[in-house]
Image (cartoon, rainbow, N blue to C red; front, side, top):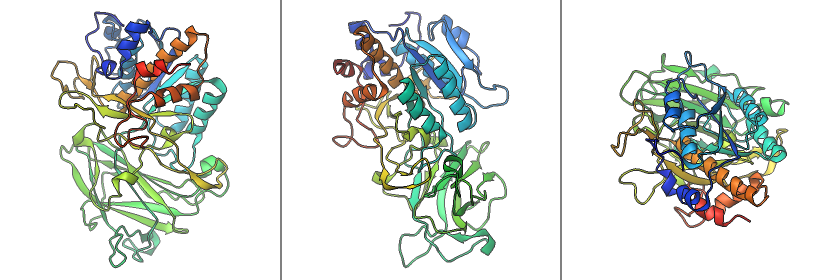
Length: 472
């Protein structure tokens, strides 16, 4: 499996038994094209050396690279490709930059599909993607899966338990004046009121908050769009006394007739300490939403990971995998920790749990019953070796090989195993449609956590050898 000149190899190879499948059954992913959609491929430089050393195949088809001079990228796409090459060394590999928004992502999906990708894997997160309705990216994935037979694997996300949801509770107070709206009451005690919630943003990080509520989106359904306008106010202190004048971007979009989405960014870059701030949610106009929810961007580096410090929801009820990671025809992958001191394997603190309900159809009609899909589907290893990342990621094993962290590292393991299964099926002149491929991976996974399916670890840890045994 691969060249002996390779210096870095994912520890996931042994954990999910892919090496065993390759050596015993002679599988390599040959004849299967896998496309990675991520931030960048070679903005940091070094891809040529990686190919020369066997970290990547001699040919990687780069359909579109990121705009390296103007974008902050880490070449996570190349790291994902290295993981795939470790497990499926003869698969044909393609790359396309994810771009800045869901429209860029949709174009990337269509482009790699036109170039023959049988498997697509991504780690893209767009905070404008809808939570309670299938957006254009999810709909594109569903069409390509059902009409073209393309299998989709995506990282569940790194938000972890950093999500808050509630019905909007009218506090009767207007802290910024009547025109800026009535504040939401976070305190569940009916005899007390608290319109200020304390959160902490990551050190030297840009933290994003996406607030959404249960109304249909104009950009998806047309029609009248959002009936309510909600804003997010951020304060420099945890008691919400000093409204932030700097470091906060967004939060005051007029949502009436548009999408029920309010995105705000917290710029703490340059500050090497985490910062505690106050947060208010204000209803400027329209009816009180029956459900509002926000999700904070997360990080696989603890110092950069934000936290919700009060009025947290019950951890068993928290969902934070959203957007196309919750599409009907996607296989969403969470992360388990590898490295020293992680035996037995444990769920990564930042791995986003699934279970977020879809409340509206594509036309904006409220569904008779919420649709809750079985995402996350499974988990795979993170903190795995790659040939670079030395300046941005830790070397947990102290073996001189920097680790690739986050659910971004987990997702390509699933895509590579899928390629091995497609190759094995083709040997018997059998074509595996995405739904059948997903079921093989789900039902052969090694159960983790509570017995049976759960939205944090899905069906369990991917097992390539067991999945092969389940092939028809």
